[in-house]
Length: 138
Image 1 (cartoon, rainbow, N blue to C red):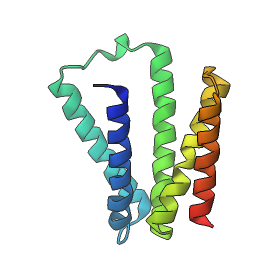
Image 2: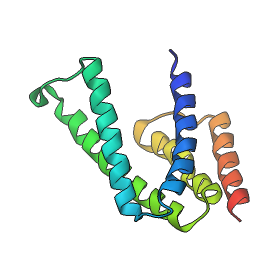
Image 3: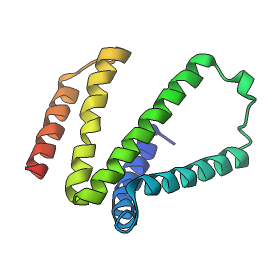
């Protein structure tokens, strides 16, 4: 399958995450809710890796990959903690668009740190996304 199929799946499940998360934190501390979500993700990932027989020894992990996956995990955890707290305090229809400013930041970071090109289409898309977020939250 092409990467676009998985990207659409990501968007679909991210939308469900906002809706289910908003309901889930309505009667629960947002930090505990994040912990429960994390345990579910961990279990689901472990089952998938086991089913596909993709386990490798920790000593076989490339150090650079391990470092950046740990940093990514920390970033994910902090993102989720902030996201669930925001959902607990605000409406999902306004929290989710602000969260999607991550798209704008990813493009900026990809250009700065990964050397990805900034085409006029990507630049225009970033401006439109940022404008759309502002329109939705003001």
